[in-house]
Amino acid sequence: MRYAGIDIGSRSIELVVLENQEIAESRQTDSGFNPMENAESLMQGMTYDRIAATGYGRHLFEIAYNSPTVTEIKAYAEGAKFLFPQVRTILDIGGQDSKAISLNDEGKIKKFEMNDRCAAGTGKFLEIMARSLGYGLKDFGPAALEARKDIQISSMCTVFAESEVTGLVAKGEDRREIALGLHSSAVRRALGMLKRISVNDSLVFAGGVARNPCMCQLLEKALERKILIPENPQMVGALGAALLAREIK
Image (cartoon, rainbow, N blue to C red; front, side):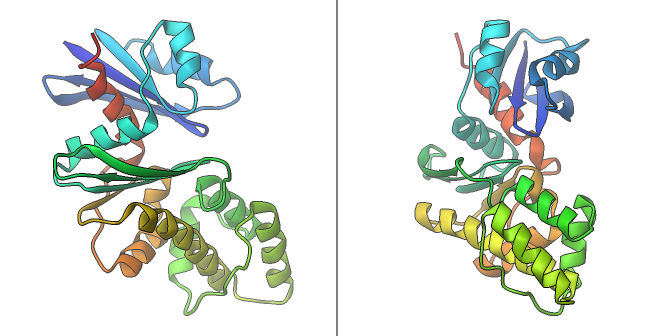
């Protein structure tokens, strides 16, 4: 049997197919203005016996394909456990939301926190801040790591922070130091969520922002421990949905 999981996020769509407990195929595309059309294109030519959907657009997928859905919390927990059986804490920072999940010793969800009402500290926030400093998103984290010190950013609201950044640039501040300050602000927000669920050992960092080396280093420094980063951190939700599809009757 081949089980598929699709994660329709606000910024990207991921698709994973499992066969014999192994990842047989995986694909990714942008959500764009018509996520269902892009999801359909992503699925073309891919075979599976059962599929489950998660993410921002899962209910649209449910209606279009008469498919079962699973919450992002369950999907990320299952995906992280598959990749790292020892995981006890999961941090996911995606395009427009973030979540922190705590698991008990049996791997069951114990507690979680979500930041789904504000894009502060998410991939969208970092993307806008990178653009305001003249960086491409891929260059933003490495540039911040070159800074000798960070400049504290007082606002985490995207609109106000962008205005604050513009003012700092006008004063001639080093944009690498501004970049580091922005990353530090995003990490402090993530740490707030993690502390509310109680951080345990073996923390997995998932989602697109886990590709940012500055975010990873700042998190490790603040938590005083190594964090686990999947080879493809954006696929964790789709992988979890595929695993859960096996359990749906």
